[in-house]
Image (cartoon, rainbow, N blue to C red; front, side):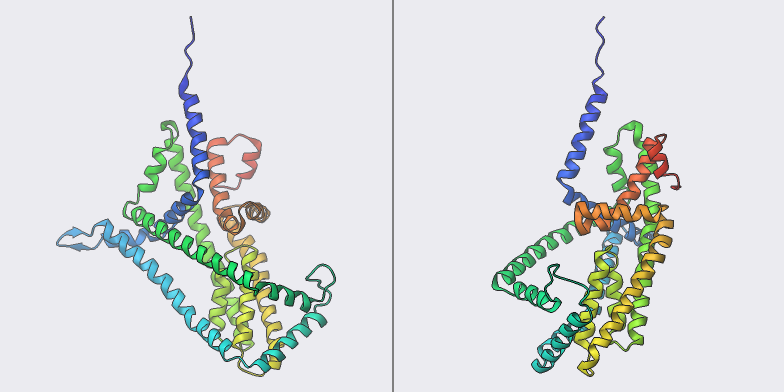
Length: 365
């Protein structure tokens, strides 16, 4: 008697492989969708609050609540941009009104500081003086070809950014309008035997990621407070805005703090209205403030706040962020912890019993 082959598991395996390939092939669109889902999680309480409003004993449609929540988030984003607009406008005016003689004096003091005080640090790696190395880099940057490539790259990024913002907002509206839409999508692509586990994974992931994003807010507040207070003490103008900028940049692991410190120190130097000879000292104290904020972030915020909120060891967080950064750059570093959290929950639900999985998820509740 010929035994019939059960094609259902084979078809399921092939379908799963094709699904993974599709997710990788359209990873940019998937990223937009996940970002839209995150916005919907943040704005869903506003939608629910709007639905409690009744007009002639009828609740407001969920579409109105979704549009209001989305408009509120867009308005807050524009308000944040407007908050920094006077600072950057002042920097542009200061650059236009810059006295060439003072600029030469300031540049001379900075190059002297680089060569005399930082001579132990070889920025070029081949024995070239630090000032000469930086001057060479600046000259290569402002060449015609360099400016053209930068301008072209900026236009391309603006175009990509417009498409990304439109796509995210468009999808976020429907996720806000129908709170169960994302859950329904997951259930539609999940085998019937795995639906209950998929629902558990989604619930646990939502809870942990909510705690994680709450940790991000705490991280921004701590960094902003330390930098703003420190710069205020040493007499820097716009201390709060520079501190807030540093806190926002600090959301990007490793690279963000350095970028925030560089931009902050640049703003400090360009907004200084006193004696130009005092700028090197102010920059030195400002650098100490940024380093202090980073030390607090490395030894308190990261291990205490994030490790406890996602139930992961600080060494795990460091390794995951490093690996994600090497694979996908800055975007990978930003998404490393949420992605690792989802991976651990899925592994615990589907592959518990394996020694490696049990060790990775033993603190996951």
